[in-house]
Length: 592
Image (tube, rainbow, N blue to C red; front, side, top):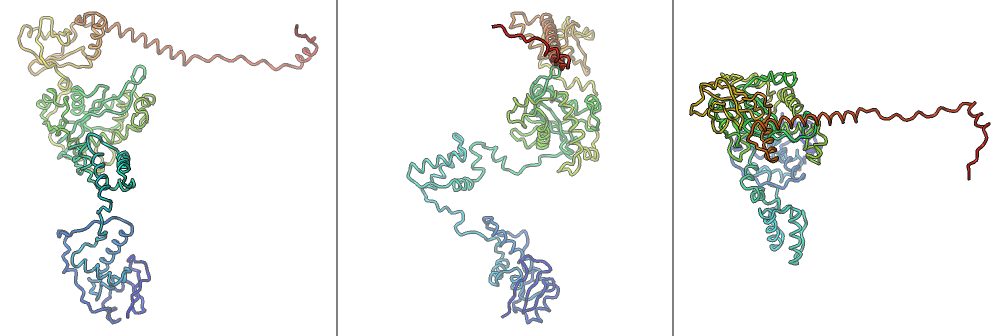
């Protein structure tokens, strides 16, 4: 009887040795001239080797595999099977007789096991058949199993959701009340894990559960630069300070446009006000125009050559994206609006991912509410930046950080992808002054021209160009800047006419300040319809605020800069003559 003994571990290398008939042979020698060696030794068997060409191992062929419980032992056994299969394939290619036995001995398994694995392979049986016969069969008593499933179903219900720990305590109470034996927490967790994730999430999340479990979609990507641009808002989780006194004010909102093909940022707008149509218009103005002036204003050294009118703009379904302003801009500047589907944030996957990148960057800045356990309260104590300083920080990161970093999907920097991609012919080249007025919001109802001018927000505006329009029944479109009411624009034909205060002594104020002043006058019992009184009240209020602010700052400076009171100089050390005088002086006794 011939014996085959492995003298090396089962891991197959060229240096592994097989002993055949008291002689040692290397595996690479057997594979190179195995037929002659085995013939000289008399062979191990006369079984005909089946060539690989007879096997149907095409990937298209369906093979039923039974999954196994993954353990280190089963994983090692599976690796051994693949080693056996690989060695058998090599020996078959070199026409070695009885390759099953030789390959089995080489990997250290019995001859019967080797032929069992070989038979499974020849019949296309699964090699990963490592499972128990009672797998996924509960051995729990029927009463306990039914009660456990009832508790799990109730825990995932919409009307009374329960945590896993709380549901386990409920199950313990029910088992003890019925006199049934208790089960372990691990068993209960396994039963919860056996439930499909969709079945657990659907009662509470509904359709969102199915969308969340779907594979992450890449979303639609433009064919080139400016082909498809996404726009959205983001609330920055960071407390900011006021410019004049550096007191905490609140969080800021960022409106941003991102090119989907190259991932570059085309435009932005940052302010303390919540998202509105004015923010959308200013962000579009920033995207349509070069950024040289922006970089110069913020004092940032860098290159930002990304601008232009997109072919398609993808917003969400917020009210500011359905405004008449955005529709008029799309008609005039010839870009189409392709809104995302309602409740489908993955339709704007690119800009959502970019906001995630910005969020991770802002989290490390002082004043961020996400990095502190106390949220906005701790963020107010740690805040160090104003709105202007945050704008400089973000734009510097976008221009010199994000645009020049390797993007994982593009395998290039966004700036390089934008510069090397073929740019289409510009659809429209907007005029700077006209665009600045176009992106301003307009009144929902037009205004007639009266002998005193045009009345907007109960304020009279005038321009000598309005004289030919007085008395006409036509209502003209009026554009206004909510952050500067000193001017409005009237559209006549294809040109805008700029109208200023009729009373040039009125102060320059925002729409919010004007409304707050009218509300304060109404609360004080005055007539808010008197524009002269409103403007005078606002001017006096601003003067008082400026005086009190200056007095406060002067007091703080005096407190912080006033030198501390100097301590009295310590007395000089007595000399030898002083000591002699003290000793010669008479001793005075205290009076009774």
